[in-house]
Length: 509
Image 1 (cartoon, rainbow, N blue to C red):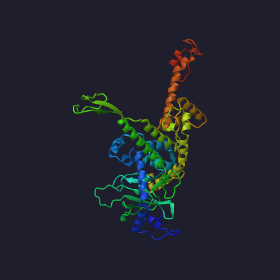
Image 2: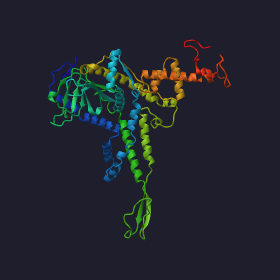
Image 3: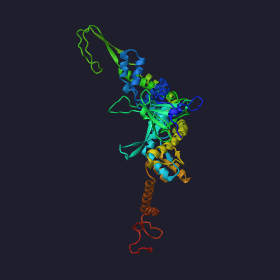
Image 4: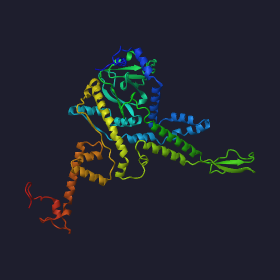
């Protein structure tokens, strides 16, 4: 049985239930505890991570340059290179290297065949493999995440078709409401929404509160919109949290991952300096003497000579600087940042051509991270399956399924071997009953069905049989052209097949 958030937040310090809160009391409670500078700062930090991961953050970098330099000219000269110096996205590279739990599609299934068929249909409808890859990456970026499941209507009619949808929300748009007496227990979620309307009334919802019992909408100041309260009857909150570590007080993992943000910004800043000084690296001409008779508007280019007046002299000043210090600093930052997460500098820079065994050893720390992340991801995927089952039972009964016997098998991403080693490994596994030709073809041709693989094998057998029949005359030759077989037939006679004079079904002489 679910309990309303109006009753949960009214719990007394002794743990006994208090009187149910009113809308005004709920508004005051939310504003006092969740409309704070700490919550706003956390949302802003994670919003910056989202921007940097998606190759954005120009506005933040512009503000950073304003903090570092005081002279307006110096600021503008460097700001002009901001959009062009973001070619090294260290944050994205580190996150994508660590997010390998779903780099290959996982197998999810439930025990009953009929239920499993519905489960697979629901998974396909929400594009589960693509979505889980994104969940894995954003989880490594933010260290915590919220994933929601819903069924949306594709029309206004009562019998309009419906489709399941998976939503991924980062901590930049979420606030966790915890139990009054237990900061580690989340009882509801505040999820930011964006309602676009042609008739603005100033009362549009900016947040939606979701609990196991109900949903209600709030304004930007977290005040409750009175007529928005709805009991959803799902029996479970449709939002499923996932964290890389055990939930801490307040749920959120604090400042974990800020080292990646700092390293990314440092590398970006060094690249700005690199490009600016590369553009300014020139030898500037200094002219001395009376310039009254000197021609004006001359091009200051190395291919265009300058004309001086009588009595004038020219000297040059080298305005360039050593650009290697910017490259070395950026590489130094990236190297140490990668080591924070178990990646060697050779791996992060794709250095050299390694053998499969050497590269496997180099990636061993990442494999350890992968195995560690499979634990919370397995727990999260099971909870997501429960939520999908309960939501579909209410909003889309045609796809509803049971979760008895649910399990998941994470696919292992293997380091590519050379063709000969790969074939030898397959033959060894095949001989021990650990592999077969169908699975081998499916690995080589992603998306190939079992029936398609069997058709390929059958066709290969037919072609090989025909080749063997055509090669039989050559196989019978033992050193001399025209040699006959043991029964006295020549290769030409064998190729012709049975004699036309022999009745069907009778052996030839």
